[in-house]
Image (tube, rainbow, N blue to C red):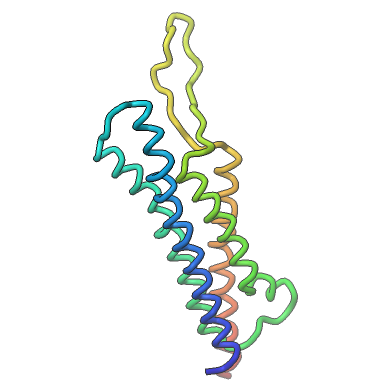
Length: 172
């Protein structure tokens, strides 16, 4: 086993460990912090509702597992370093780790519902009570989640192109 392959395995282990850590912290936060607060307010324990809340927090894992898996499989298949500074920047583990790390942390904040905003449409003059208010994450948190997530998907496509290029170059 070469030193570079060992480093790639360590990078894979680190990525999956961070993903598992935040995927476990979000439901734990909901279970130990959010649900007791809701029980104080409502005074009842609705198992189906709480199961739904916990299930929503677990969505972080499948959203990020596939891009991380795809990027690392391309990394394992890549045979030589990427040429050029810009291409090397797109191919580096640090770039992917920072991008997915920011998005995973934002996903954790979304799952914990700390920065939730009540969004109500403007009321007509004849109506006194809002009728269709929704809860959503704060707008800045959505940008913090979707921006790095889309950049991670772009990095996956760039890594695929770099890997195919390196395989074709070494096979000639």
